[in-house]
Length: 255
Image 1 (cartoon, rainbow, N blue to C red):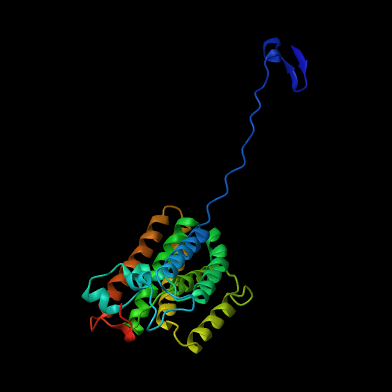
Image 2 (cartoon, one colour):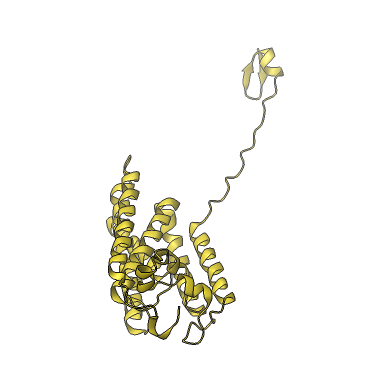
C-alpha cells in the first residue's frame, strides 16, 4: 500500500490521476414576464409605425394594427374574427397605457412567476386575458377595447388567492392595497374597461385557486392546468355569446 494525501492506496491506484470535472454554472432561467413585456412592446411599436398616435387613438387617427386587432363585439360575431379575443390583450391605446400596464406586469409577474413556475404563469396570464375579454364585451360590446389590463389583474388575483391559502396577509404584503387602488382608479378614470379588469381578476383568481389546491399536489398538476384551460374555453364561449352583431362602426371610428 502506498500512502497518499487521501489515505492508503494500492500502487496501481496511487499512479492513477483523478480526473477533475468542473461544474458549469446553470444557465439563468428565461423570464416569461420579460418575454411577455417584450411582445407587448414590439406590438406597440408596430401600432405606432402603422399610424396609432403615441397619445392614443382618436376619431381622425387610428392605426392599421389597432384596427386589425382591437376587441370589438360586432366584428367578432359578424365577421367571425375570434382572434380579437387574444390580440386585443397585446395592443395598447397610447404610450401611457402600455407604460402603466407593463410596469404593473413587471412588478406582479416577478412575484408570481417564481411561485407557480413558468408554465402555470403562462396559463394564468392567457386565461386571465380571455376572461378579461369576456368581461369587456359583457360591459361594453360596442366599444373597441385594447390592453393587457385584464391579464395583469388576473396575475394580481392569482397572487391574492395563493397568498391567502399560504396564510400570508394580503394587507401586510401590500396586495390588498394594490387591489383597492386599482379598483378605485378603474372606477374614477374615464375610458378604462371596468369589465375587462373584473373579468381578468376573477379568471386569474380561479386559476390561482386551482393551482394552489391541485397543482402543488403530486400527480395533480395536469388536472390544475386542465381546469384553467376549461376556464379559458368558457370565457371564449361566453365572450362570443355576449359580443353581439349590431353594426360595424364603433363609437364613430371606422375600423
